[in-house]
Length: 441
Image (tube, rainbow, N blue to C red; front, side, top):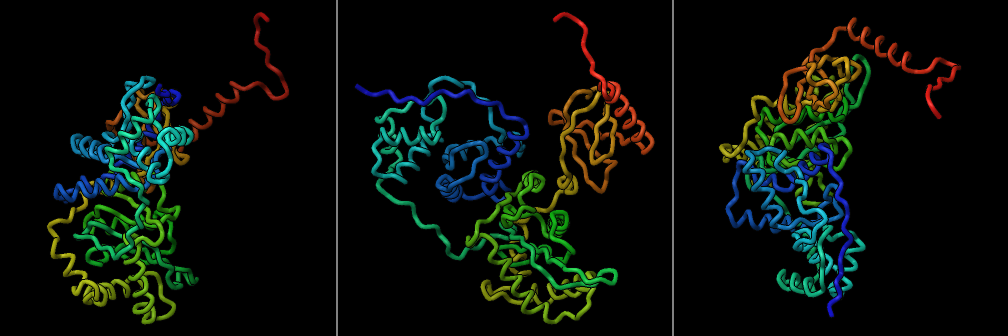
């Protein structure tokens, strides 16, 4: 007699829109190099999909670490069918919650992964291990015979995971991959005082060309975004952007910018060839060949002017030892494959906040008060804006634009604040007194 092993059915929690967006951004990061303007041959695309299905992923709001090839293909189909809408990658609400159903791709991947990690584990024990780790999709009923058939179909043998390939890596075309990083620069003179400078640079993996490299007075995200914007306007848009794991690069704002422009933001683990090897070698050239030639007591403008000349003449004009071409020559050989930045590039860099419209038709952003249309009272709005342009805050509601908020002037801001304070004081009991409600016990 077969033993029926069943996972307990769990009540699926509804995701917020923000959580759905996080999942969609992750999914876009998985498929971005399969849906760009540079289409891969069918065989190459399938190899890439299979490669991704074997990787370990940190999937938002999931205990799983693998993604089935069929799931990746489904995401690609949905994204392309929508015309490139990020919302097409939002997780859909299940219509069969609480019901027994066929073994899904995610559970199959979990079975295969655990069997490869523990090849001597019998099927019944393997199911128990999957249950303990919460790796079986709620509603799925697994039998040992089912597990045996899955493993046989997937061709799983007693094997160990292969070693990570760390051979020399190079992108095939210009703007396939950019690498970016920050280098600590020399002291520069600002208003009679010496301050530290930072070199923010982007390098094209294929050609070694620098889309942008400039010294700043800090390494904060706003400085990096300024350099990034200049890079996109100068040399077009990369399909993948490799940055390190620093906190400045792990922001939803940056993820949203890259996703809206159709590029993958990839945080590189240490020692990977696709990571930051080329940008680090460029920084070595800056230290060895540029900085020793710089005069003392330079201003920020001085060092950027001298550095720009050095990049164009010495760096871009020098034949690279690995490619036997200058960066300019190698980048230009496939210039027709590069994507130019959109005319509304600035809009993609806007920050996003969500605010609920109060009864007096107002919302506040960074201590500034704005007036919203009456129809949005009580509604939560998605608001897009540039910090440097506080009078241009766009209203997004249910995925559609509804114009811009009206900023209230200083006197109106003070008046609204006073009225709010007075309302709050009237609503609260007087100091030192207790307020009792009338009525029965």
